[in-house]
Image (tube, rainbow, N blue to C red):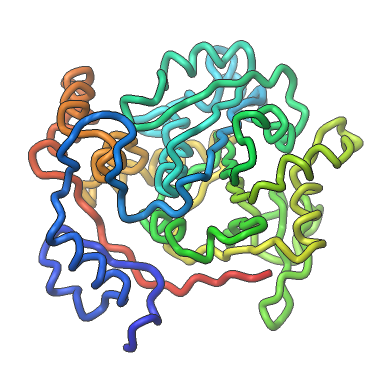
Length: 363
């Protein structure tokens, strides 16, 4: 196998030499550099110069849209919003935040309802404990996903942004490698397509026989393709102005599909078809919420690694040091989550192997 044919990387903490023949050129170079670099940055603090190996665009801002009424999960959502419901051993909100962290995003705007936002502030705090900075904004009424771009306009400024829906869970180690691929951080808009057996409840991508993206449809009655549009969008700095130019739909909402179609019409929409190893859930129904929790439990039990652990990502990146991790461990010392943080302090973060799958990016 020649170098360059495996864009996804394998990075394993144990018996690395066994896998070295299968590593990409980029991974071999990265491992060689890391062998002369301490795992954890020497100084402590929040925003330090040491960066992890996976961030792309350090100027990219993040938005988590965690609004809505959660009617598909009633009566569970009568007392707490769905983004704070547990997905096995963590609040749902941890998972989209971790996805943004895997993309190298450290400044995140969390948008939610006036009722739920104070609770989210108590759960997430300032973000400093994870080497992040949070801002919190209200969405008084659910007027569409695209409204999030307008609510966060002054937070975004003239920078690019990653928008993720608060109930979209990307639960696979390959996401770090996908988000770190240079093809996901070019100009325009990058969206992510996931193959589903019944995708009609989502936006649908259609491709021609040559793999060219031809159509993006919003929740069609009959799906003509299996590629569902996930709730993760990587926008360039033009997204806010485009959102300002669209008009509300018949539902009275600013539809994110209208924004995305503007990018598509100008040839600036890229659709990345996620490989089979990428696990995605829209956890807005009881069945999908349970399935996501079952997957997290099974993965953690069998791998010894955690999914959706902000402390682990920040510690591996050098965004926090052992002192911050110890504070977090003490606050959860009697839970399995706290025990995992104790193992991180003792052994350091562990990488699990991911398969090499070529990324398919179409526009």
